[in-house]
Image 1 (cartoon, rainbow, N blue to C red):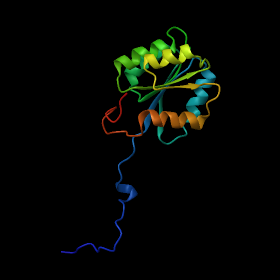
Image 2: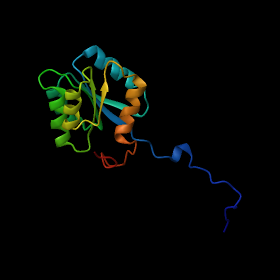
Image 3: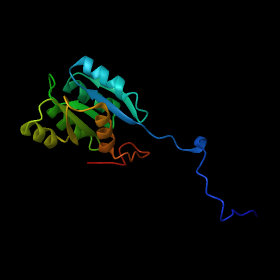
Image 4: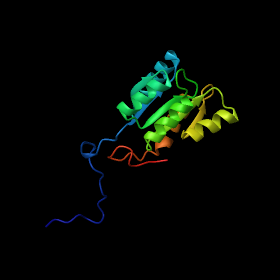
Length: 156
């Protein structure tokens, strides 16, 4: 029976035998269509992200979270019909695994506290954040420990 030499380095599995990495599923929520569409195009270029849907208000976002089961929701805090804070509260109560990355032009103490109390993982200044910073924030919220079962590898 052949044995492996002690001096022969261990080879990693061939690329063809590796398990595919599951991409982070994103729902984008912003009432400004141009911003939302542009963000979707820009974030969609990252191989580790998959844009699964877009919503223009909080009520639409709630329906899409239930239907699409995203890993992360990028949520504007100020939305029509149901604001981002209330939408975040409702969706994180119903989906404990869900990570919400809040975006806001209002970084005042009251707004920050409301978003965090509602269940947001992070709140970023919409007027100052770069695309790369947003990408890293999304990755950090899920810890990049994407397990085989949806949501099993991370929680709040």
